[in-house]
Image (cartoon, rainbow, N blue to C red; front, side, top):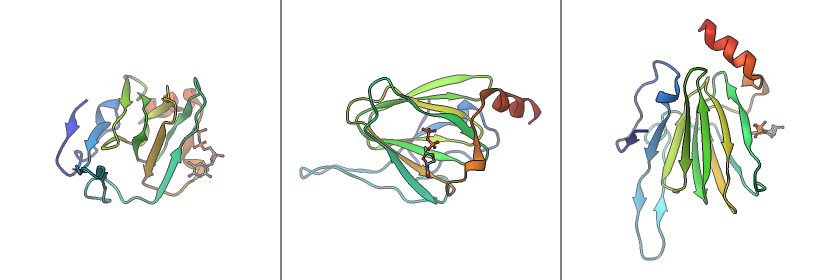
Length: 150
Ligand code: TYD
């Protein structure tokens, strides 16, 4: 998994788990406490149209076993840790997030599951589009079918 220290991940030409990338955000260290920030199109490779967060996840639970047709996301472990399992229909990858200054860029058309949340984990998700139920692919066989024809 490459760590990108410059502004933007590479332009997306395909959608494989290898297009997912860790983005390292600015980190302003201070004795009073650290500060990290992001700006759309500078540190995030899309305009942020929605933000949501997942928290109070009971031990052993997982979230988000699905793919999106169009939506791109950046997932940040603001507190605690979690694992993100990615699957493009061919290859799979699991990425551990445990720093508030790292974000995981997930392109569209990647099956993804968030799991192994630590106690008090908070996962912040920056999303490229508003919520749209039709954008979800919730059945894995349908995801595989769509991958075969693209
Ligand atoms: P969902 O994305 O389906 O979560 P998961 O895949 O982890 O089960 O979201 C759960 C519910 O929350 C679903 O009923 C839709 C609603 N929701 C919104 O209304 N807006 C949002 O931005 C999100 C992410 C979810």
